[in-house]
Length: 222
Length: 222
Image (cartoon, rainbow over all chains, first blue to last red; front, side, top):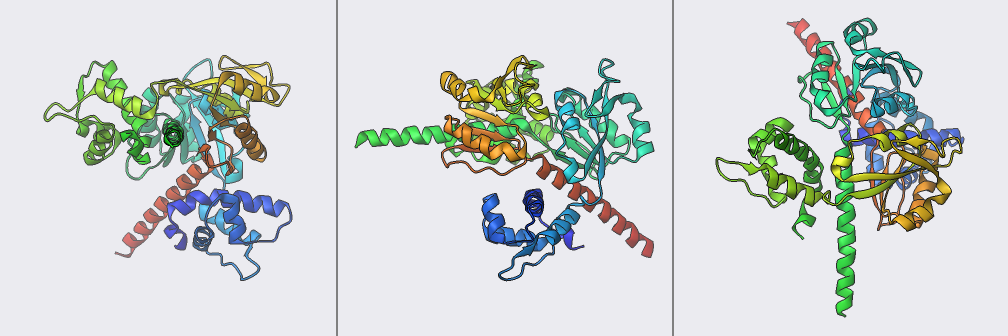
């Protein structure tokens, strides 16, 4: 039960720890300090110690944390020790990229099928998978007991796609469509909103420029 | 200066408001209430009113907000009324998807060039753009005054890429590589970390399942 209490901000950082720990293990490093991890990730070492404590692993004074123990504990906390199968709806640019992206397998995410409704896409191959007709998705989900789906369809088809997936038994949805979707309470929804990220980048960049311009103007006065 | 004080969480929600407002405008809707927006986005109407107030637009009792005024104000707050040019480094699956993704143009983001170091990719076309050799990037940035770059290279090349971009004068970096990057303080960095998103989805899904199993077990006792 302990892991149910790990706060989501720590969960979000776990993959970054995992990445560094795996790189360290590859290089033959046995132990690592909270300070080293903090410096790699631009965090405070207090934050790192809190995050790692929530995984159940304790560091030893002057030795640090066992790289191997941390990898096992964090992987387990994330549930990434058991590979999770997911399917993708939408074989457009984004869906194809996700299907072909080889970065997910390290996180226990296995894309097992890609669906589309466009007859020109059905039968083509993406990342080793054949694009299947979307009207066979119910049967696929039932036969293969897939519980996670990635939505990569255009915004105006996203809600209908989510409704259909929930009806077919999907329990976790990762939504890349630029649209807020409504799902029943017992379905977990994660959204990756590229527009929101770009909004923050644009605004931060303009604020920085303006600050600098204002500083320069002030300097001109003196 | 008012917009400098708009909090980032509001900024993150602005593109979602914009999306609904633009759809409403297409359908000929002139005015919209905070309650309608809240219901579309799954937010409280108090939150919506706060967010919209920060854009400088006030609603009128019984009429609501002018759709057109809100579109103009939000677009301006985001700086999306002037198209921003960006280049992409990395013409792999993710870089290609971003280059070809037609959803960005609505947000004033124009991808103007794609760079890669792989000779097999150079000269091919992605989303209407020719892939250029990465060793010409300095000249390109200087000649075209591009200030934003998207990093879509493998993790082990990401820091070197960021260093190179900063040296060439890039001021805003959107990092899709699964790696935490260090940049000087005057450079704005936005990260889209797909692994972190999937971490949250996996953990939330496992917690839901477990809660239900536990509930069922409790029910069995009675």
